[in-house]
Amino acid sequence: MIVATPYDQPMDQIQHNRRIRPVFQGAVGALDGTLISAVVPPDQQVPYRGRGKGECYQNVLAICDFDMLFTFVWAGWEGVAHDSRVLKETMSDPANNFPILPPGRYFLCDAAYSHTRGFMTPYRNVRYWLSDFRNGRRPRNKEERFNLAHARLRNVIERAFGVLKARFPILKRMSSYPFAAQRNIVIACITMHNYIRRTCISDIFLDEFNDPNAFYGNAQQHVDNLEAGGGSTQADQIFMLNLRDQIAVQLNDMNYY
Image 1: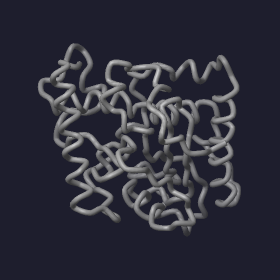
Image 2: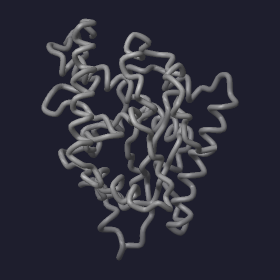
Image 3: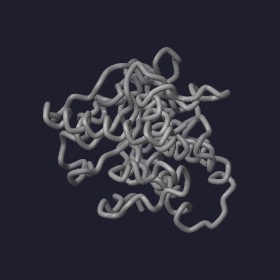
C-alpha cells in the first residue's frame, strides 16, 4: 500500500491550485518529518524528548503524493533528531529503499532541508508559510510569489499528517508497547490511511483536511536553519537554484498570488 508514484506521469492528480500546476511539472510529491508520541524507558528518554516540550516523540520521515497518499515512510528516529539528519541517514543506506528520482523530478520540502537536485525548498529569509500571506498580505516580489506557490503545493504533506493524526489518536498518545511495536504502529496506520484513501469515496477525516490553503499544526513545529548536505554536489545545487529562479520568474510574469 505504500508505493512510489510513477514518476513519468504529469501532475494531473493535483485537483487544487490548477493555475500553478504546469509551473511545477517536475514535482512528484512533498517530503517532511513529523513528531509522533513515543513511550520510552526513563534511562533512554533524553534523545526522544521533543524540543523543550518534555514529552517523548519519535521522528517520522514521510513522502506523499498530491493525492495525500503516502509513498514512503521511515519511522523510529529519536525525537530530537533534526529532519535533515533523518533524511541524510535514511538515504545513505540502500536497504531503506529511499526513492531515487529521475532527472528533472523533485520533492517539495521546507527550509529544514537542502535545496539540491531532487529536493526543492523555498527561498530563505523570505515570507513562506501560508499564514504569512493571510489578511490581504499579497506577495511583493518573485521570491515571495514562488514561496507562496511552493507552500500551497507542499501543504499536502501537512494535510496528510493532519488526517493521519486525527484518524488514529494513538499517534498523539502512544501506548507503552515495546519501541519496535510503536514504530510498526506508525507504519500500520499509514498503510491503513492509504487503503482508505484509495477505496473511500467520502470520508469525514479526509473531508476535514481537504482545504489546500488551510494551515495545520505540524508546519513549523520543528524547523530551523540546518540543512541536509548528504551526497549533494555543487552542480546539483546550482541546477536546482537555476530551476527555482526560472519558476519564480514564471510566477512573477503570471502576477501570481
